[in-house]
Length: 147
Image (cartoon, rainbow, N blue to C red):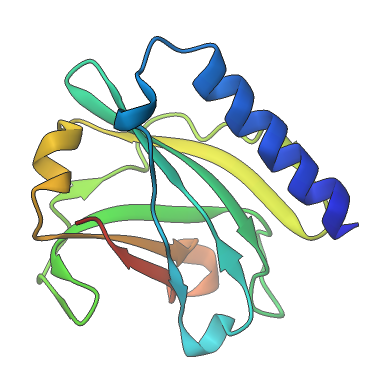
């Protein structure tokens, strides 16, 4: 099953990057680390520009046991770093569409966008945070620094 999920991710990312006009050097893989409540899980977002905005394509495995809304996660960009997040998100990426284009028992694929240029995020001082849905307690599942 993991081979099928990995293959689907490769095909999806290849399709996204192959069909876009975004140069390869502007597409960035962001390593996200799981928190203790989600230990052993994997999240691999791809960050790329979309005009003056930034699009994130996510592939996530695993969610804590007892999740009421499986596959429903929230994504935020915080000022600071994972070790020292700001008091509130700089960008909430949950108002727009959350399109899941492939989902298996072990992986979830979706996208989010933020109204900020990739270069601003790459300059440093921002962290990407993935949390459970509000119905599940909004605990942080993954975090990764964007610089």
